[in-house]
Image 1: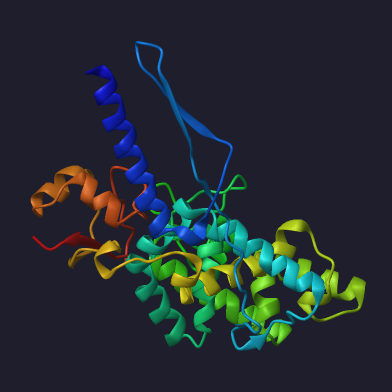
Image 2: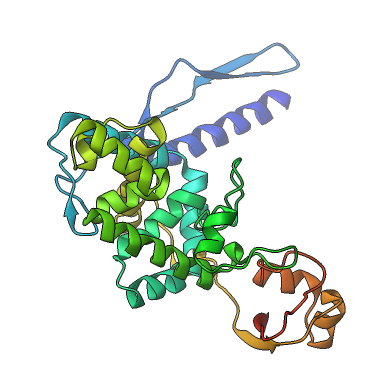
Length: 313
């Protein structure tokens, strides 16, 4: 009887792998890896496990950033682009979550970029900076656009104990647009603007002066900035051609924001938890949808007001 059960189990496993191989026949190779089943009577059955085959992607012959051509015919440029494609396409968990998350935030970012005359491709810069999460860098940069405190204040973002507008999606995106415009006025091309977002306007200008070159792709830069634009380009390529790289999401797979009501606040709130309950919400919802509120209270200065978002009931 044990032997009979053993062969049934073996048959089911073989059928399972057969179906898998048939469905993914172009993605598997033979392997020396084996599964061995041994009964209590010492009988041994063994079979090989198919090994996942890593795909080589057909990269585009042409790609642009903000309608500026990327010189892929330069060997080092192609290799740098290819590196970021494979790093990101095969970090599947990160890419899937980024795609799912993008539906919550990209519409807002795209709208603000468009209204301020910034090319749409800069939404991928926000992805490269933060993965569309309110992350904190080791240096102290925060939010989707990774502003340092002094830079945030320079672009009129409030940074205090109670409020940090680096975490405010609309206001921080508007501040990023102001930076990008000032960088464009200095460099005159969007590729250099994107590179300067990583190393600063002054830093990029110095490298150009030292090497007597203007084109980003011709400059020898630090590792992070050298990879930076190619990471942005990889996000663009994968997002615009997801099926080509193995990502097949349906509309139901994307995360969505709830409908919001906006409450204008012009007086201090000593206890945000109690305040949220008063408006048929709770502290968790308040903080999730208003990450710029950084403490359990809100001090409102004279002449100031804030808009707080809460989900519609």
